[in-house]
Every structure is written in C-alpha cells, then in structure tokens.
Image (tube, rainbow, N blue to C red; front, side, top):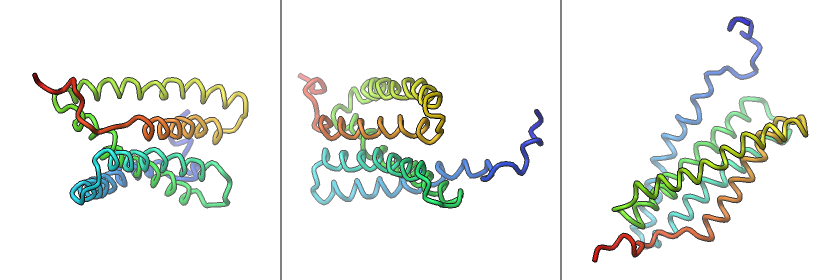
Length: 174
C-alpha cells in the first residue's frame, strides 16, 4: 500500500507527534526551577524528589485514564490531554533522575544503569500484556492504557514507600 493511500484518512495529522517532546522541554525547565526553589527554601531533598516523581508518575496515568473514557471530546483535545500528561512526566528529571546523584555522586552512573534496567521490565511485560488485553477485550483504550496506568500507579506506591535521597554508606570513603 502506498503512503498516499492514507492521506486524509487520519483524524489527527501525524505532525502532532512532536507535541509531547516540545511540551516536555517547557515542563522540564519549570520542574527544575520548582525543585531547586523547594530545596533552597529548606524542603528536605527526599520530599522534593518524591513530589516531583509522583507528579511524573500520576500525571500520565490520569491523562491516559481521561483519554480512554469517552468524554465526547474532539480528537485534538484528547491529543492535548495526552501531550500534557507526557510532558508532566518530565518532572522525573527532578525526581528519580536526581536521586542517584543525591545518594552517591561516585556511583550515580551505575545506580542509573541499574534503575533503568529495572524500569525497562514494565515496558517488556507491557507489550505482551497489551497484546493479550487487546485479544481479550478488543478495546484499544483498555489494552493500551490499562497496563501503563497499572505500572504508573505501582511505581508511585513503590517510590513513595522506598525512595530516599540520603547519601548512602557505600558511597563514603574511609
């Protein structure tokens, strides 16, 4: 099938795919300023990291849930909701991705490698789960968004329970 065969058939032009990354650039700068200001005003670093990461996890989950329910919104508004949720996930750059440096500047790169490896597991499991749910429900919104929402919510609970930005003993020199 030729590319031209699809012209005019999409509800939303493919060019809108640039919106989430563009919005992320904007949000990243805001998130960094918010985190820095909170720390400068005496808020504990762990608390700031937890706030930022919670925003990064819950925003996409809420926006995916909203976009998967038929609210009667035009497609461009749904794109806006999803773009906003994905942009707000940039708060992770002031949450999770700063925590490695907080707990061990010397081993931050190794810690980032470990956490990124663990963080890739939901992506691997999610692909199979999405296919299974699509076959089971014949609903793209459930199949696509339900696993992501589940992983975001699980990540939020785990993060809020266990995350800490306190320097660790393995990082201290004798």
